[in-house]
Amino acid sequence: MNTLQSGPGTIHDVLGIGFGPSNLALAIAIQEYNAQVSEEDRLEATFLEKQPRFGWHRGMLIDDATMQVSFLKDLVTMRDPTSDFSFLCYLRERERLVDFLNQKTLFPLRIEFHDYFEWAAARVSGLVEYATEVVSVKPVTEDGEVRWFEVTGRNLADPQQPIVRRARNLVIATGMEPHLPPGTVLSDRVWHNSELMPRVAQLVGEGTPVRRAVVLGAGQSAAEAVDYLHRSFPAAEICSVFAKYGYTPADDSPFANRIFDPEAVDIYYQAPRDVKQALFDYHRGTNYSVVDMDLIEALSRTMYQEKVQGRERLRMLNVSRIREVETSDDRLDITVEYLPTGDRDVLTADLLVHATGYQPRGIGERFGDISKLCMRDDEDALLVGRDHRVATLPGVASDIYLQGGTEHTHGITSTLLSNTAVRAGEIRASLVARRMARGGWRTVSADGTG
Image (cartoon, rainbow, N blue to C red):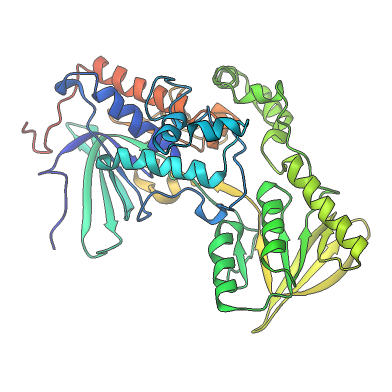
């Protein structure tokens, strides 16, 4: 069985695992850097992505949903406003620049921003290998020192053909994975909201009757799922279940939004642990379990209109939790408890959608060998430098960078788009600086030849 490699054992300077917006921004930063330096100073980079093509939350690309972040916080502008990878340059190429400006908004449609990401990804396509799932990462030791990493991937088009890549530095950006309540069993009737669009399209296409759908969750995705299901199944009752009294409006006021400023990352990083926690708790309302006010008002208006008309399809089961789900061939029996009294009702439903958020993927869960090289604090959290580089044990000459999963060190923007461009620039600068401090690298083969 042959093994595919980038040349005969090439050791890359940088290998990115995952190719969502974060590593896409890094690929752009590296490509722009390489265009400005001599050939010997360039960063040899490659990225591996499990998806067959670029995709970012495809399951929630609702046609009229807008971004919750300004278009100026695209892949490059906060790092370099002159870059031709900006959203404005994308609009110019798509011949929509004037049309967009006439909309007088900072917030593009989500499908439009996704198209922008795809446009940018196509321009750095030479740096990424799609349909490649990373299955293992092993440190390679030479003269008692970890000098590089050997990354083994599986080509999803040909699973029997392993792919091996070697790199001195890793940048892990595997994104978030759906969070589900304990004991949840997924099925054709029970799914996470990340599958919303394809699941609804399948049901509509097959003509599957939906009489009642239940959505669990109180955040933006939950509210969007409720609204989309209500529009997609005009004969169905849509029940929204959440523990709050009502949806909480997102705090996007000017002063609160400063928590997303690049300078705020410096402040958060340097703060004592108790201050970090306080800042995170104070500003949860900018991102977690909150909903845009426009959507809250639209849902409330729909409920009132239905009440006037005497046909209430949209129901808010507030201060409630789902306690049990029983599945049969043709239905779900969902037990919902009203928390103030403890009363329980059983809803017979066709669908249950968990809009219960996401959680970061840990290094140890997928890359156990390199996890053992990483240093942790007394709460078993990874020690991460300001440059997003994980602190490693003595004798490790190769570096591991994280894009995401660093809320405990870098704050609330760790998993958000707000600082994507800036973070990519910081990681690139760190890679270059550490290479220079070590006297430079050459792109050599594993056998030491040039």
